[in-house]
Structure formats: structure tokens, C-alpha cells
Length: 253
Image (cartoon, rainbow, N blue to C red; front, side, top):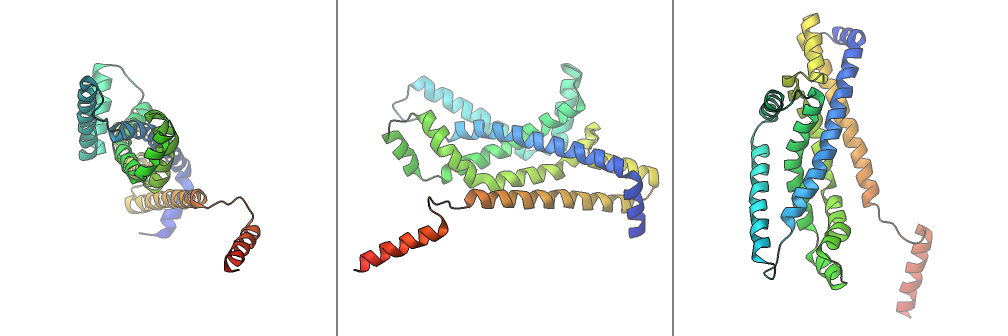
């Protein structure tokens, strides 16, 4: 492998690589956001526990939906995304409607990500102190209000690193969507490699592009996480220290 050939390939075929990067980011970001919405709905529903005072019909319906959601999660977590892409795309394309490949790619990643996100959100909800729920209910808040205003914001904050990790995983896993001819980065790389017959150099360039995208995403999400976890006070830092010292002095007197 020659680094000089790598630079030549990048310089000559950079429009193809840029198109692949654009498609990869669009599919990955859209799929992750929609998957997060699916995860919030599925994970939130599964985390709700009905008490014994609820009607039997409601409890039976809840159990039936829980079983269906569990099957959905296990199926999409237990099968490869490439198989899911082929199955979903050609099943709909053949039996229902001739849909766009880009839409199919977003749907596949969204459904797949939703299965993982639902478990991430459910774990985030379970990590919230049960006393938060009890305190909210004691203030007269309904179960829905408690979940939306108290539990979910804390659950998302706790699960934020795992949510960001799913986006990074989707950037890499989107490469399997070339099986349905999506013009993402791996598809473009195959085209360049087939044109130049420089397979090693082309895939090295592709690997570096993937590494750059995931590294930049990790850096951005780490910065956001630090901002989310930053403790804010109602006073400037100097004032806070002044008041803390004043209180401590009063206690010693």
C-alpha cells in the first residue's frame, strides 16, 4: 500500500466520497432520531407498571402489548441489519409499493435502532430514584405527568452516553445498506475501488473517513455531556464561596 496512491485517490474521487459521507450522515442521524422516538415510546410503555387496582382488561391488554414489544426487541436485536434491510426493502417493494431506497434505509435503521433505544431508555428509567416518582405522585401529578415531566428527563440524561453511542454505531453499520444500493460511503468506496483497482488504498481512505466521522461525533457528544452535567448555582462562583465561608463561620461561633 502506498500513501501517495491514497492521496491521489482521495484527490481525484473526493466528490464521490463526499456524496457517500452526506448520505451516511443523513441516514444515520435520521435513523437515530426516529429510533430514539420509538425507544421513548416502547421503553416508556414497558417501564410503566400497573397496580392491582387497575381493571383486569387493562392489565391483560398491557401484558399482551408487552409481549409483542418484547418479540419486536428480541427479533431486531438478534438478527443482522443486512438481513433486515433485504427483508424489509424487498418485501415492501414487491408486495406493497415501489418505495425509495433512501426512505427504506432510514426505516431499516430507525426500526433497528428503536429496539436498542427502548432497552436503553428502560434502563435509564429504572436508574431514576423511585422516590422521585413517589414525590411527584404525592404532589398530585398523574402517572403521565410524572413520566413526562419528572422521570423521562432524568432517564434521558442518565442514558445520554448510550444514546450517543448508538449514533456512532449507526454511522458504521450504515455500510451494510449498500446491499440495497444506497449510495452511502461504502457503496461509493466499492465503486472507486472497482474503477481504480486499488482496493487496499481505497478502503484505507474509507476507514480513515469513518474514523474521522466517529471521532468528531464522540468529541461533540462528550462536550454536550459535560455541559449537561455541569452543576449550575444561583450565585457566581466567588459569591458561592463567600456565602459558604460565612455560613461555616457562623456555625463555629
